Every structure is written in C-alpha cells, then in structure tokens.
Length: 313
Image (cartoon, rainbow, N blue to C red; front, top):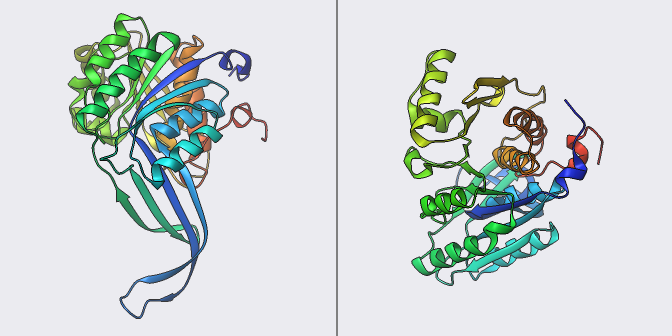
C-alpha cells in the first residue's frame, strides 16, 4: 500500500449528517456483591464522555486530518452540551439543531475491570421542526463539501434520507451511507452503502457461499442504483461489489478488544479517501487498516493519521 496521503487528506471536505449520541463510560472496580440484589457493586473511579454515532464518524474524519462539518439534532440538556463541547475540542465544524422536546441520545456504560457490566440507553426521535432544520442545514453545506456521509442509527434524524440523497446526486456529490434496518429502498441512488455482515443478512437473507453472496449483493446494488456496495465482515475482512465485480481484503491481524465504533472509523476513512479521489479498492484497503486498529481500542475511539501511517502518535 502507498504511504498515507496526509497532504491530500488535509484538503478533503466531508459533510456528516445523522444520529448524534453521547457515549458515557463509568469505570470502576468490583469488590463485592450487593446485599440488596445479586448484582455486582461497582465503585466508580473514573468517568469519560465520548462522541458517538454520526458524531464519532465526524471525529474520525477530523483525526485523519480532514475538514468535517457535522449536522444533527441535540436536546437542550447536559448530554447535548457535552456533545457540543467534545465536537469543538475535536476540531469539528458543528451545525447542530436543538430540539427542546428531545433528550439527547445517551448510551451509558458501566465497566468493572475493563469489562462492560451494564448499558443504559436514553433516546427519543426528533420532531418535524427539527427535521425541517436538518434539511435546511444540508442545503446550506452540501455545495462546499466533496462527500456527504449519512450515518443512520435509526434514531430519526434520517427519516427523510431519500430527498437528501437525491439532492446530493443532483449536485454530483458522492453519498456514503451507513445503513440501518432491512428497508434499503430508502437508500436508493446513494453512491455507496456499507452494511456489516448482520445488516447485509437482514437485507438479502443468509448466504451459503461466496458466489451466492456475490449474486445477492450485485442484485441489491443494481436495484438501488449504487455505484458500490461494501460489506464489512469482522474477522472475514471486507468485500466490495462494483460494476468491475467483486474485490476482497482480509481482516488486519489485530487482537479484537472492542468493536464499538469500528464501523464509524471505517466509514470516515472511506469518506476522506473518496474525497481525495482514490478508487474504491484503495479506499477499502485504507478503511480495513483503520478498522483493524479501532477494534484494538476500548469503546468508541478514533484512529489518527499517524496511526494509519504506521507511526506512533
């Protein structure tokens, strides 16, 4: 693989639109069982907040050296304020809509001895007014970016995803989609869709051979009028489907510590590489390498340009 194209990436402009989250971690020690119920008692020693969902995609773009604008919806609450602060610290240009009726999506994880013991989720879908403001923000920013990324976590921000795709396509701007659910018709006309193995099975059913996967993937790609379809397959690597056929790259040989957020890292890397004009196969190779680094880290995390270039940060 060629050297990491840091200079070119520094000129990339990526617009990320999607469901924002705050990932909250409480780290502690477990030394006893509660007398109230047969559950461990965690004595919290450290707390940490991280950007999650679409915000983690944007954070990864920034960590790779790209320019990124983030569009999404927050509540007027403590978690929303934390997302704004973390986005600013990460160097993200954030155009965030506030929906006062909404609780910012929050995933709170409790860990003891680096093992996740409990996760508590808080989430609501945005109201119509907030979706109107999302549409307006996309219209404002689209023309000044090279690529748009739609990060769908099924929290409601991309309820109107089809008009966004059509608008970007009319402007000649590539659309990369991280999908959710089994209704892929809503992503019709995107440039690339990146389901993981489980999501692909939801969309096309289980396959019994590589040839069967290829046939189903190419049929789905044709039906949706996609330029490319990338299936991320954990320990089996990644498989890319285009008009040129099937291309595959094996997983990087890293110890898997935590897969949380690895898909965000992959998507961000694909976005910056396509923004600078690399072909899909090269973009996939870089994304595979970034994903291999991400799964070796705890929780939602970023992969930096220095790490991707093989240099310790």
